[in-house]
Amino acid sequence: MKKTFAFIFFMLAAIILGAALAYLGRNVAFLSWLAWGKSMGIDNVAIDLYVLKFSFSLNVTFTISQLITIPVGLIVYAKTCKGL
Image 1 (cartoon, rainbow, N blue to C red):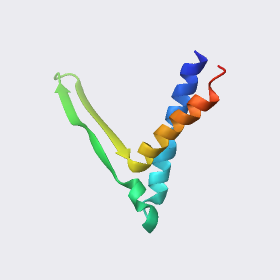
Image 2: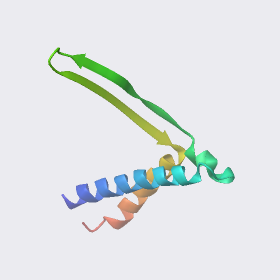
Image 3: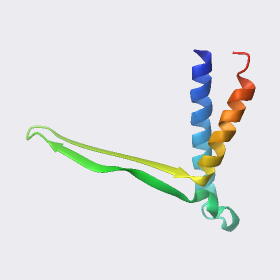
Image 4: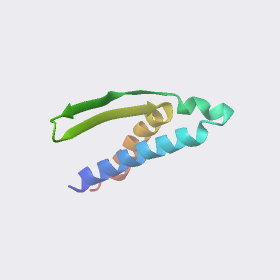
């Protein structure tokens, strides 16, 4: 159970760190390539039941910096969680 929580923590930390690096580096000339990425998902699926109306959308964006920090997070997880 501890390993599962540690894995989720390190993955979320890596994703958030990668997004922060992309956000901070987007206006810096030599770091702007870290912010390049693709977005995929579903836009506005609406279900109208006359009384209730639901609207859903799901978008996921991946950047180069996140693709770098996720493997780093996996390596840190593997190194730090051997004894759990």
